Length: 247
Image 1: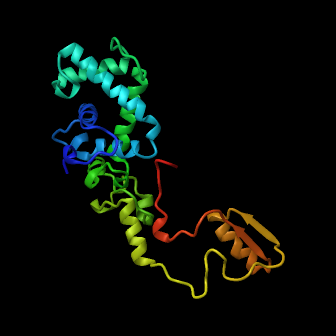
Image 2 (image 1 turned 180 degrees about the vertical axis):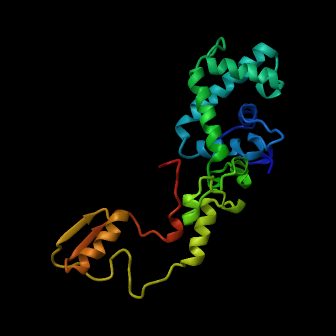
Image 3 (image 1 turned 60 degrees about the horizontal axis):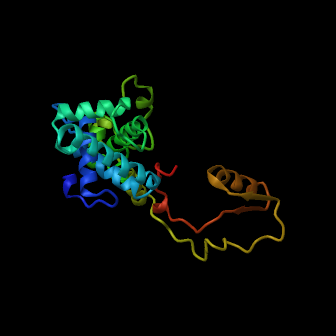
């Protein structure tokens, strides 16, 4: 998929072009594999700015505009139109904080922000918009998301590769739905419980969580009346998608 044809949610076409050129110089394509553009780093950035990183939109709008303006002052062309050596020189000065006339955001923190989000877009889960076709993981030889390793894999001194198979969060969720389909419990209303509340409770769990889910049945089997209180609606299994950006 060509990022230039992708519908962006936050970035303008010119902003996406500048960010794409920056990312491509930081992680260029070579004989060993694809570059940042093909892997989808700009798409990731756009999706992140539309969600968890929305508070950084002003920094990106200003920072990309300042970089482009500085490029035009120095070379009479925007950053995306410069050759690789000129782009590298601009990025080196940005990293050092020495581009003259720059206002906001601060140069060195903005460079670090670009680099951090590039890494997330390259090697994060495809669920978040980058790492298209798991290309970033293929570059690393990383197998992606697996819920378990074999005993042999745990004891192996070599990196675990899963024989070249790659899995994402979406793949894992699909496998769980296939092997453990939702089943309705006759007469069970998740908003009310399986039975009316007892007149008294020996144990009240405020926020059951993963640990409480194990402890509550043990206490109930011991003869105690256990009540667990949770906020919010009942969630189905396929709604439990990890969200690393908001974690």
